[in-house]
Length: 209
Image 1 (cartoon, rainbow, N blue to C red):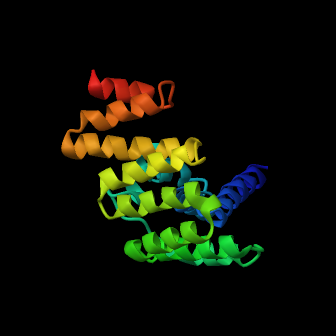
Image 2: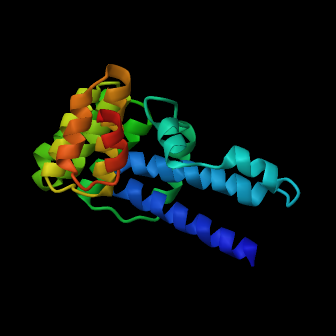
């Protein structure tokens, strides 16, 4: 029974990762893949006697995952690319989805400038995709260490229809990085202004208090 439940959990995580990449949400897709890979190693590769000890090493919280994929650490892009390619085989894509996924592929190849240009071209061809693409341009800027530019793009993405949990996560992440790396209270205050009832309100208030 536990094995069946574990398999269902992996299926849900894998499906969410596939959906995120399909929609061009690279950061969320990578987060999901990291959780999927680590959960799979733990569930499928551990004996019953080893699980309690390994649980300490394989536990993944929000902070740990964000550190793993962001400027604070290194993501396993090669593994992410392989899994993404397998997942996309069974998806039917329209023209804009094909281009968005190609741009996402450049991101996974760590060609951030190329990915940025690709998303900019998509916006010119498909203006209705601006919110999503500008958000991904923000991701590219984040990986390149251009945190102010990343924040500007995330906010523009929010103002163009991508006002969701992923956008809030991205905005908070870069605001927190700006505070920690550059002591930018204004970035945290900007988060508070954008999300007066946000999910990171307590953390933000603590930083500026």
